[in-house]
Image: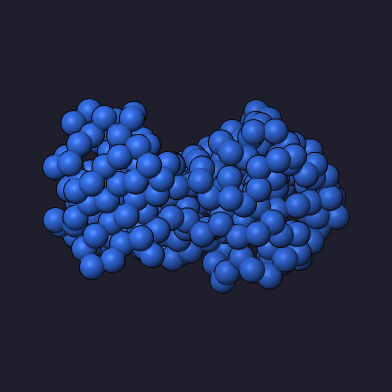
Length: 250
């Protein structure tokens, strides 16, 4: 069967009806031309809700494909921690990387943000970002898609971040090591993690974040690129109080 993720597809719920899956045209091309599958071959499908379907292909051409659901697997047990990632949008392709890796690392929501030092990203946009998230979920075996919000100002992010603690990755002198912060949040059901852009946060932004009750957290002695910082921070959170911590304890 080859690599399992090559035969795993996100299909919108509206295209799954009465046990029949209608694949998107670009997926039909991949099935027929790239994977060279035929009627009777099996693939996996998920619709973003948490369920996963085993599907046997019924019709397949380079432009359209469909299949019958032969098994429906219910949503997997939920994670121990719901994480929102707030990310000041960096220039160039770095945001693409962050979206993909955040999806692989199990975040529940991704909030692109603009700060005082932001440089708006040319090209891309919400549709492209959603495709990146979908492809990352296909590759990683994830069954649900993280929510992707419109780009928000930092002030709007503070209003929409949820009720859990807010951790801000920063090099401020008074910041505490992220692992130390996480160990004090073991019982938190959710949290928000905010990562700055290339220029970091301004003094005024740091003051506003402190006023909002944010916890300033350090990622160590080295100055990390924003895309590296996002991945490192998420990995630390998941390893200490998230999905990976649960695996380690088991």
